[in-house]
Amino acid sequence: MTDHSIFENKTAAYYTLGCKLNFAETSHIGRSLLAQGVRTARTGEHADICVINTCSVTELADKKCRYMIRKAHREHPGAFVVVTGCYAQLSPEEVAQIEGVNLVLGSEQKLDVVHYLSQLELSREQDQAQTITTATKDIEHFHISSSSDQRTRHYLKVQDGCDYHCTYCTIPKARGRSRNGSIAQIVQEARRIEQLGGLEIVLTGVNIGDFGRSTGESFLDLLKALDTISGIRRFRIGSIEPNLLTEDIIDFCAESQRIAPHFHIPLQSGSDEVLKLMRRRYDTALFSRRVAYIRERLPEAFIGVDVIVGTRGELPEYYEACVDYLTELDCSQLHVFSYSERSGTMALRIAHSVDPREKHRRSQRLQRLSEDKLRAFYEANIGREMRVIWEEGNDDGWMTGYSDNYVRVGRPYQADRVGSMELVQTTGLSDTGLFLI
Image 1 (tube, helix red, strand yellow):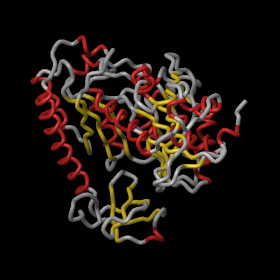
Image 2: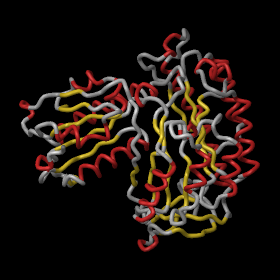
Image 3: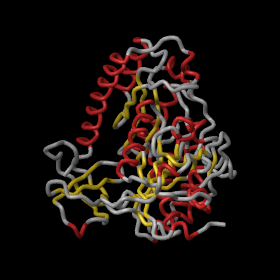
């Protein structure tokens, strides 16, 4: 039973690193503490509790997490520091050794912060506090969570975990097996967002195309159910594996007035040899078919593609094949990541490694290709009529928002338009080339 008295007059500060899934989960933690009377600390105020939700997708991510933990400890001296998330799950002992950390929660425990805090003495005296680690290898439960980016867009977690075991990836260890909530539960949360005035929901997860594995439903069924919520003007699909992005899903997106023509698809490499080394579940031929079918059914769609450069086994000729493939691919933008070696992954068994300087060169080359593709996509949308949801923020007299197909559009700032959807016709690129006007 929760001892509510320990939370009386307490404040909390929240730090989130990594993916939108983490932001949704941090918001869930914040709401659960708020229900106990713990308010968010104001700027400059010393919090009683610090919650740091970590990422561990790369070595750099781990480094950023350590920095953020120390930063929280400095900014809130004497606060009870809780560290959770993927870094806490994969390296709990390492996290526990960082100065100021009082409680380490793994992925299975992260959304039960109230329960664990209620069992402890929230001492403001660091030298009296004991570091407690509760991270376990078993990750079984699914908790629905959602967050807002303080504009009109909300992120809704529909799935967690992954049953794929790509050679470079630690996510199955960090987040467990694929699992999800029921369609009924997710629709209920979407309706809650609707009642809050949300206009756009982004569906997030680790492998959302695998939705339904734990409930006997399907991702297409989920889209059909969400499409009936009239108050939400737009749903976006988060990253979805190409082998799980079926033609039926693409067809439904083409017919729907609420599912945005926007696809974020992880390719990871344009070389079939590298895809085999990665143990991905498709080849470039399948990926090309998916992109071609999207263009057939939704010619104006935004197609973002994830690519990893410098993986073990990426010989120069494999990289060149990747560049050639991506140059010809009819996509809108590349999201380029440099390979980072992770302890315990199968990729470490692959002999050939890429020099860091060469890895950087390869990344920069693809970044330039991405910039060219994005500019071409924006220029192709000049003159089109599109629905834009205007967001908060005044950037040198401009306000911006995104169209259904993820084109950033700007207009002179007008406060009463924030949070509204408007039909606009673009006339050209801004001086900076960052948005259409």
